[in-house]
Image 1 (cartoon, one colour):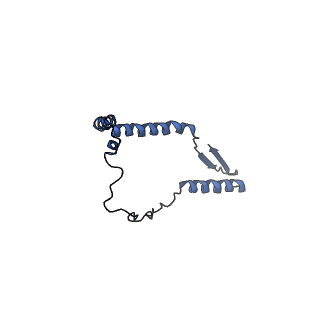
Image 2 (cartoon, helix red, strand yellow; image 1 turned 90 degrees about the vertical axis):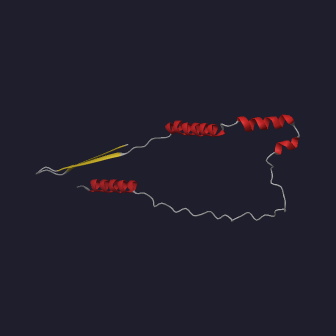
Image 3 (cartoon, helix red, strand yellow; image 1 turned 90 degrees about the horizontal axis):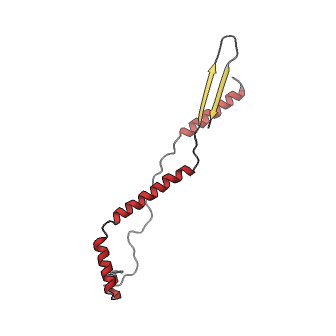
Length: 125
């Protein structure tokens, strides 16, 4: 075995072992968040915005629109699912724009009586 083939074998084995290694899973730490917001609150203060905030405009047309929207808009979850599906399809289509890598390697060692050892290596990408 010549020096260059030994080096090639060592480099190939190191690359193979490095490619098979996986990092140790990290433990997620809890975020440092105060248990409650401690800002000043006026006693008896109203929650803002109120559940019927649009009625402060005094517009019957606005009240009618909000009432119709609350009554007829039952498919917001379907719309959100469609948006998520469209985003996923976009990600799938964009994946074709990124490079694709593959690596293969073979090694053969043959020894015949009365001759030198023959080592053949090939690497494909």
